[in-house]
Image 1: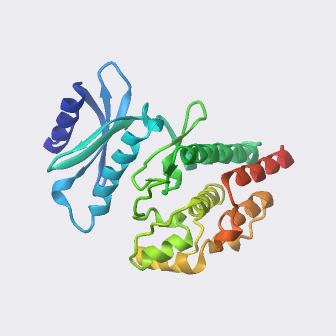
Image 2: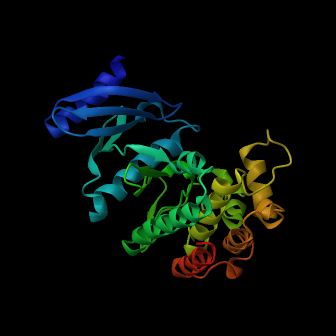
Length: 292
């Protein structure tokens, strides 16, 4: 364990008045995640970023940790999930409950050979929509819908993670961008122009849900990039132009009812998408009744 990790852990220990034991570290280029355990208690994930190294490449990452603290410590929804957060001249950090489970993509992949797989897929998608709807009812847009941010625990419960680009619905924060594969085209258009998108609403969340569901079932991203090595900005421009072109032109008809549902979620025209999460649930329940 290097001195930097020791320093962050000491800050959290001082803040909480407890002793932390490190179980595992997972380093990323601009933000680190450490799996820690409070003596005699549960496991937690400690995230931190280096505020002493702010530059063009990591500024958004650092801000996302600050913003996630704001979301988690302000909303009652996260009172059993969020432990603490803070910052000084060197670091910004937050400590949250560790969710033991599998990512949505891994969970569905492991179940793909089961005879009732289609039923499982629809039931899982319904659980995800209920989870996102719960956030909306509590004044939160997630704004970064992607498979790694949904964990299925041992009881089959869906847990939503990573609120670094989330926002309160009634007091929106500037949209800084998320994983490009699941962005709505109208978001991509403004980000490609260098303008932070501030008008994030339900249609953009619905698009991302449909795009993620497509990735989970078909194993492909929703936009067919002409060049895999395209830059982030080039991909944004292509999404802005073509939307979810891979979904709209999909020829795999192994599950046509689901494909029609996904096409409506990801229509390039905002007013042609589902008008609400309740409408999405109704359509999925109808599909479920037809295939059960």
